[in-house]
Length: 398
View (cartoon, rainbow, N blue to C red):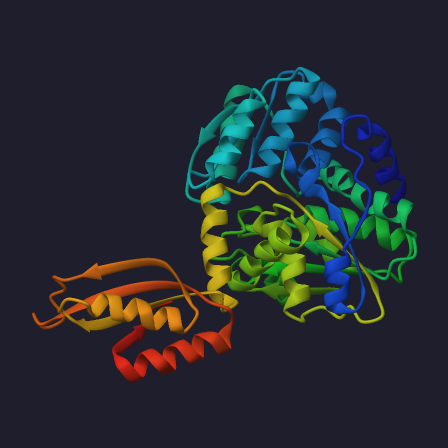
């Protein structure tokens, strides 16, 4: 596989952006270790997926001349669509109906026909296979394909070509194509370098499969990190992970959201949920980085603006910088003014306030006020709650 991946890199190198490793001063200081990012969120189409798609199409041009079809929740779709446009091939992409609009529109902008079908990747996959047979289109699998895996493995080639003395690489895992390609190359180059995979707790198909010793299908893969929201991993990728991956850990939705926020605030990078999973694992203490040089693969940056907004809100709440409290006031002139003055004395900033005078759950002589506050940490929140509780009937909402 080592030679195949090197050949794949030679095949696709003129089409992809060269992305040197980025040393993170911020996260290296936080962890006390050397942390590097492989920023595939800055790759063409905003994801590593272009590598596998290009390699597969270029290597199988005879099969692809009549057109290609793929199923994807977004990044593979854009990789295939871009590759097809670049090589002058017709492309049809089947995407789940819930796919963020940024990924749908980006795929269409590359000239592909987009078909929205089903509630999950698996639904889209089955429809794409059937549609491909009906239209005579060659199917490009998002992960369980030898040539796709080899294309993704070019990331491992680039990392070690630039810095061969690393200790470990941390990779997000959905269907397993990315980690399989990287692991196959890295272990062939130096088996002492650790390969660690990270999955969302709500879509831990590879973790479950390795635990049971067979490919299993999850009943659900409901994670906002849709790039790794896969119910069933591939047969090829499962075998590769069995042989080449040293460890797999899972991260919660909250941990992923915090990592996305950390990328925005500390690294000034826009990273999607899947791409943030390795950092989420690192910040949650699930990966040992002490005295190690660690590379985090940032797999993509295609994230919907509305999702970013929700993540920022949740992340600020989780880190004690935002709270919402419901307060029962006497319905008399000056009551709201007194409340705002008290909040001012507590040095909290009012972000939003809703004064509800017709709440059926409170007496006519009272009203409910929901106040969202910008705060400075959990100690500040505790002080606010203690003071307001001594003056009013209150309930913490968020």
